[in-house]
Image (cartoon, rainbow, N blue to C red; front, side, top):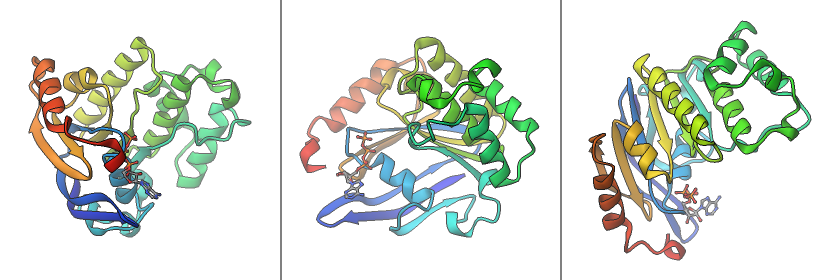
Length: 235
Ligand SMILES: Nc1ncnc2c1ncn2[C@@H]1O[C@H](COP(=O)(O)OP(=O)(O)OP(=O)(O)O)[C@@H](O)[C@H]1O
């Protein structure tokens, strides 16, 4: 389970997160929605120990810095572009696997899960489309078979087939027990995929509710009603 417990983060005069509390239970997918600058990436970065805050962000009760087996606890994709362009996909995964002590045979499994072919994995990353980089990032996030998965806009750059593949993959991962937190601007995708939706605006949680998969329109209406007064420049 992922837990944010009264998390507040300031960058100088900017209040990026304002007393944020919500949970992502095991075996479920939570969509994290909000306008640009609302605080989604900041919350994920805090959970992953990249930046400090007040309050507690934990995975299975532990803050990131105190986790003894980080790769088996949480996998993350925050920036699919942050991969060395001169390495192949397979080399990228082999290095990551060696760093976290995972057997090489897991590389084939995660390539398969993320929908990258062996031939694609042998190409250098500089020739990858954004969608292929997203898939590679998701494959890397899954290497340690983590109990929690944190994905910042994983559908970004994916074609419809890719979006469907990610949807099926995340559902399978959640059904296997994983707590999945994903940010997105694709309301329709989130309405179809997520079990819960957390909406954030200007650093404050505006809504935290289960999703009724039959009513994408409801989610859209709620989202726009809650965020319509949001001023990006003030976020
Ligand atoms: N390193 C930083 N230094 C200063 N301000 C920052 C920093 N990182 C984020 N912010 C500010 O914190 C706020 C939240 O940003 P954040 O990137 O978390 O939003 P987001 O919801 O992920 O947006 P997007 O949908 O555009 O990715 C914004 O006002 C942003 O300008």
